[in-house]
Amino acid sequence: MPSLIRHKNGIYYVVSTDKGKRIWRSLRTKNRRQTYQVFLERNPAEVEQQALCLQEAENQYLDYVSTNFSPTTVNVYRNISSQFNKFIGNPRINEITIRDIELYKSSRIRTVSPSTVNHELRGHKAFFNRLVIWDLLPRSPMNGVKTIRITEKTRPYLSKEELQRLLDYTSGTPLHDIILLTVMTGLRRGELINLTWEDIDFARGTILVRSRKNHQTKAGKKRVLPMNTTARILLGQMKGRQGRLFSGERGGLLNGNLLRARFKRTVRACGLDSRLHFHSLRHTFASLLVKEGVSLYHVQKLLGHSSPRVTEIYAHLGGAELLGSVEKLCNER
Image (tube, rainbow, N blue to C red; front, side, top):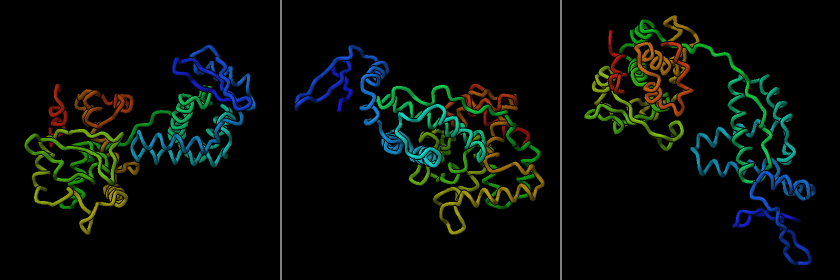
């Protein structure tokens, strides 16, 4: 069976065996895609036999993702591929067409949100592009596939008055401290739950956000947040606690789902917007900063967004130092 091999000189060759002797035929090109196209035209049957089945290719890609990305990313891709396999089965990768992707997109939009479909399409694009890089495909079936256009919706967040109502209602409870610290720092729920006193540096006035064995930060990166006066006072009052800043009822890790449910019940009890959820506290942090005139660049850094595009959702709401930026939240309190 002929195979395609790239020589150390950069030229591609078709290598076959005749009576036990290897025969090299030069394709006289260093262009990968052009080479594959010529090989495909000359040896369609061999290419058909050599093409991997989808699930085999996915397993190879999963090994690559496991080596180069966080466990969270691995789980995300595993879920994406599982949904795709349920729809398309296990064909050879060179049999998957743009039409197949479009049909999959149409099928998924009936059961999940447009943003979820777009998220999955981006995962498929990364997968097929990697197969092209590995010379397993001449081109990606994702080429020409468009994501679903999503009408921007305003994300719910708390006004200063609503935030105060929430804090008054939870006064004297651990939830009060959780809400206040989240709004003053923009921490994600998982980041907050996994904070320990080793992450708090009162001398420098900073909070270290980093990955743990049971929790990976976004993209596996750590970041250092400045404490404003309100956060510093709150943490100073909590200083006597041991281990993590916030613990469960029996002293173990605080359950994120229980925290989310407790917050929703509190929102309803306060008569606030029913769309508000725990992550809305992070939106509140960002929205209040932008309203105070803090630049989107600084908001991006504080939130830990890898791309400014994510932060631009707050642009409609509208400091040389980040500490000066978060200090604005302490005004009028």
